[in-house]
Image (cartoon, rainbow, N blue to C red):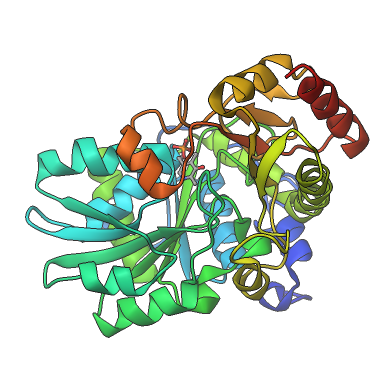
Length: 397
Ligand SMILES: *Cc1c(COP(=O)(O)O)cnc(C)c1O
């Protein structure tokens, strides 16, 4: 029946066609939004079968929904994984993975430069449930190995890391994880599957805040997990069923729409970011710039090895530290002062007082988030205008 084997298609083609194509009932080309909480059974026997997990069909949207399923099929294709599960947010996805792997008394080992919300989960919630998160400098993977013991159930890394843009060696972390027979989980939010495919480098589970580049338009909060089918089935049957962090059909559809343009958008995010990173590195009022695509980035070679391109996120510090940084973000006009990232609009923020404000002073220093560090999510505007805006804001310092 199929005239084209999608499993052999290239990335951009999968982005456009991977969710399953034309609706057989109506011919609708865009995946329908199945805005329904429940689904009628054909008979008492059919209902009982579906509740036993036998046969194909939908029961109730918390357990699965056709729009959600289309998104999951496409995300699994794009990451090169067996299966995927969508969640109501990136945090629901990350917490779901951890709670599915850890019991009271267990621990996980994580990179220490990490999304602020993940750090909160580690420090404030997991300890209440008897789960310990051990954060180590994972740019040296031997530190991960040193922290592993018989109660370690997973390794979680984020690369490029938020907000310092440090790069972690996925292959080496996977080797360590497998030597200890535990899974490696990679938060691939910053790179997206277009720029980096952790499963191909040995990772076992990929998580996303789909709120960012997957959606791409700053209008949806969502998360996705991609892994082996057994793990995804368990995650759906226990974590989603019992904790309930389900994505809405409308949000699943917004992500499907976002995915159609993912490679086109990422190419532009990357080229804009490189131009701006270069502009900033030569500006006399800028202390330093961190962008994995600059040869001055300490792990530029590693980034080149494991990424197709270097993404749309830049960290930098202006001379005069925090005060001068505040002056800069108060004076940008085109660029918006806001958290989140990966939108069409360029967004600027100050991690030490915003996204990473729950880190103590010591923790900030330890993971390299300086008081003056500014995070810029480079959007899709014309780079000339973005540089003009930064130029005028820098002149006010
Ligand atoms: C935003 C973000 C998250 C959390 O995702 P939400 O969708 O906000 O819950 C996790 N990891 C990274 C790297 C993020 O940027």
